[in-house]
Amino acid sequence: EVQLVESGGGLVQPGGSLRLSCAASGFTFRSYWMSWVRQAPGKGLEWVANIKQDGSDKYYVDSVKGRFTISRDNAKNSLYLQMNSLRAEDTAVYFCARNREITYQSAFDIWGQGTMVTVSS
Amino acid sequence: DIQMTQSPSTLSASVGDRVTITCRASQSISSWLAWYQQKPGKAPKLLIYKASSLESGVPSRVSGSGSGTEFTLTISSLQPDDFATYYCQQYDSYPWTFGQGTKVEIK
Image (cartoon, rainbow over all chains, first blue to last red; front, side):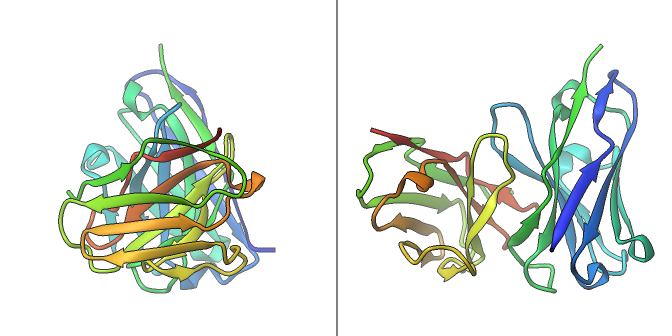
């Protein structure tokens, strides 16, 4: 079964750090661009970042540039999001998602169940 | 950034109704548009990619059309499983952006 499973969410104070993980199974992880997408409580979806198959290209939404880092370990079939200098507005469910196509320009066909990140004192 | 605007924000409809959701982009995105369905507490589900291509396993009552700046998602005969929130997403230019969502409610 093709599956993505996120972990690592939790409660963190403003200014703190958190590392999210996404474990992939059922497909050739190293063949796909991967993304993180977040959803604040009661709000819409926001794309956060993506990473090329070999990790050589990464893109971010402006609001997280310099604070978040996306990475991957193809040997472990895993995607990561290191989040530093967290703010209240980063509070959201974070989903990892797979590109449908092998190119960067693609919809997301596989999503994880999400992991909740709460930034609060 | 490309702004995606969906209308309406909320739609009340009955089982069997034909429903149409519109998504407008602030600049041309060719056909680089996807539609997703999301139910409460769940991850989004891909319905349509490249503006009009139906994802495998999605019922044929769902269709997408449009190019450039104006797109539509149509459900030809609304079923109980279709009551959900729908999002459009552009993947023409970074950062990828989503519409604000359209909630389809039971009338």
